[in-house]
Length: 358
Image (tube, rainbow, N blue to C red; front, side, top):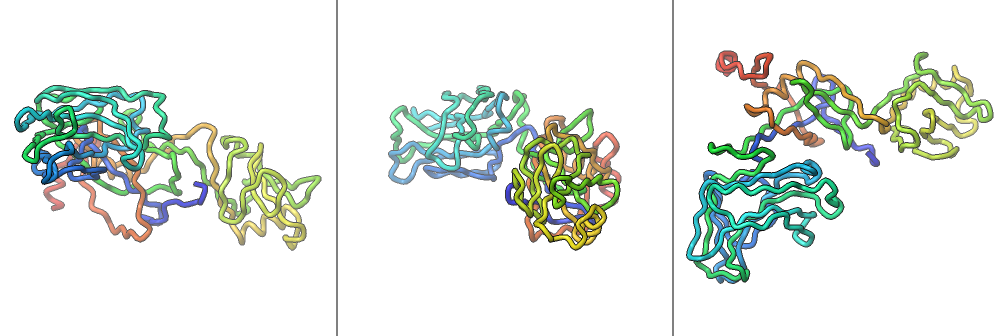
């Protein structure tokens, strides 16, 4: 927000937002590997870990499960359906927090992992997120001294890591991406939430565009006629930063600038407007629309269009625990008539329509 960066790609003249879904299992074996110290082979929901050719250091691999902020106060469950090992070397799985690299990490669990054993840990509500950015799952081989022979290995099969207790039937990782249209850009902190079976956009920031129309309620300052302000936007956060396309943000009279107190204020330098009246200011706005973004005191829920709802249902896993994450859109992306999986009103896949479309 500080640099006023936002999504610029559009669908049918609306802003396009990229949304990613995850099913129950958050472990993506083909996704981001944060760190590897050994040799690993990943194939068909199975992870084989071996040391480097000279052995010595305990081999392992760290998989990122997601941003740690999403897990605060929640319990994470981990399970492997089958675990194989060589000799007396112990295969282990543990959850850990990572900040950017391997230099800052905190181990949340330390457990010898047996096949079918469920490991769980509650992420503290008050975890210092300045010291942790990601939640990761570490699978490794150890004999208690961090030194193993070159022929040591551990094999983990059907590993699950998620927010709900695993069942006897293995649930693989599921992920899909779609795009939804919104009326104006998203900013940091905006979210997609599910309320009574419907998705809504939870806006932390509000965008206003002033074009000089009468309903904007502009008033001219009495002691400073170069000041124009409007007080009808009461949902704003008092004294918050404000980002504008034409003015810098200020906290006091520092023309030309825009700032929020009890009102939205615009200050001009003396003599800037040809007609320094309300009418002259409105005429200037008509030729030079001013957009601004400010933080809301209380986030607001914004309904999504039927088009956006269908897009979100099209990437849903078949359960109510699908996690939706706003990903963003590359600035050079092109979106052309994206095909959406046809859904019934309850979100279930309409297989007849799907087969017809294919």
